[in-house]
Image (tube, rainbow, N blue to C red):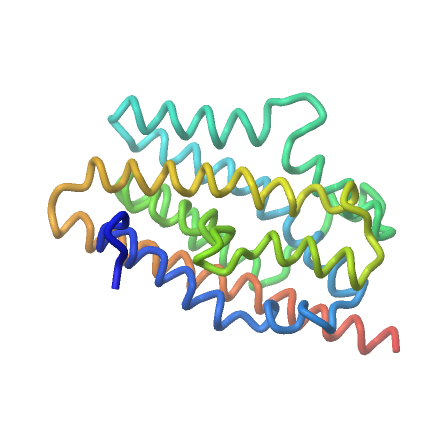
Length: 236
């Protein structure tokens, strides 16, 4: 049941995210079995995801007629994630990869797994070919994976990577950064959806887009979970 401070729509969004987190094999695996090989796979695949993400946000902006929504996305997602010198999300991800022994070329030119390609096609379709609010819902749930009530994903990953891989807090800045900023981003996007979606049909469409986005999230994660197992076994 939703709390008094949370709408039924917001509660439904968070349940979609939390249910997906519960299904992710990577979440269970990374808790105590994480290897350097598997972590490297995640970074290689996340390099494609990070660069693709800004294209998806641009699709949502292009489809949205509401200035407040466009301004929020441009300021909080596109500018904050890409435009600050030395602090773009991709550069911070690359630094974590370097700490694990990858080269910059390994990260920049990593070949996407088939599962990564399929997931990115799904997010492109959800943000480019649907309404702005379906696109926003599809993107915002990815950020809400870092909400404490939805799995607290990045916070746990930061702790797991430090404990099991010997990385420092500075090395894992990518995870700690997402732990903080995505709660701002995700909360802001959700509030905008609650503000501007007035009909049951709109809310239903947004919830369906959120579900489909989390389906893509599971496909994406399953890909590097299995590839991580394969590379770990090959090394041993």
